[in-house]
Image 1 (cartoon, helix red, strand yellow):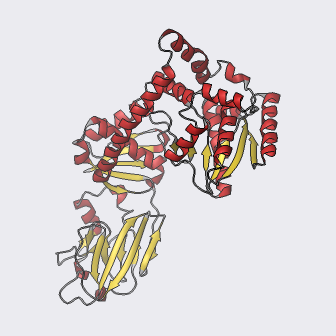
Image 2 (cartoon, helix red, strand yellow; image 1 turned 180 degrees about the vertical axis):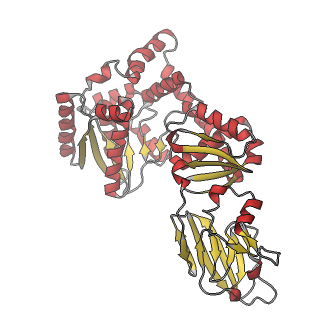
Length: 458
């Protein structure tokens, strides 16, 4: 088993030198095997092991005894120990989630608090090949798509699973051969949760009546699905970059015409990607929500919108498809001074850099890079959002045009107009960032000094 763990850690780069690894230890066979395997691997690589135990508050004295067992074992091994008491059932009732969901949320919240205290690190959990099989069966019964069939990965963000391709039989053999003390959570032997029912009843029935190697079969299914999903994600990422017109922390705009040309599969994946970027996950978003949003975006009804769970809104505005967080409805005014060098504005999600050159530069086709005649500037440079009466001289024209009219003519969504940065000096609007520059400041044959301005997302 140890050889497999070592291969997993090195193949998937699960642990780095000097890294903090918070090991989730319940005291059961799986987590104790993980702990001792990592202690063994520490002979190969210097890193920091931290033991973390959560008392879920549902098993009374038995849970307290498990907590004390892990505390005592940590002391014997001279490994830092963190523990917390939580009320899983109370949290589940308050937040209207299952006990399993509540327990998972509270555990990982605690583990990440430890990582935050240590300033960096990963969480090591003892999910194994049997857990993977249980996960896949549960997802299949819920009607999962191909993404769900890949199951758990060896590494997911800050979570690592060094035992993922190791069966429970192998783990128990390792525990027995090395005479490692463990505790038994008797609730794991009771079919009171869906996962327990799958482990205790469904999997044994399938093994006895259909396929004695079902766990290995489901493992192969997860690996082949992962290959396909990785390819689809790569395509989706390329399409997203091609279709995305504007991206901020809580809002994404896609090109409607290009979106409508894509396959139904890619449309669904693009929408999922946008929602995931905005809220950080897809929690609360079901297939019915994705399907409804695809249908809306395929229509040609400007102004129509669809409200999704968690305050996510999808709507059409002219040639744009907008997915955003509802709380963004009110836009705060902004007005900031600019200086030579990099100017970061995290609240706007952009960085603007200013450089001055004593000559003309090659022109860039990037809409977020512009150059201006530095000597034509008047006073200080700033970025702000629009004000009533704003106007500028569009490039190639001699007369003024109202900013409001420019936005209307170019079908810029109404709710986006107050968020677009305007580059100004003390007298005029120089550049509608990402859109149009003023003719008054263009570089000409007489230009002696060039101001190069770059705007990028951060």
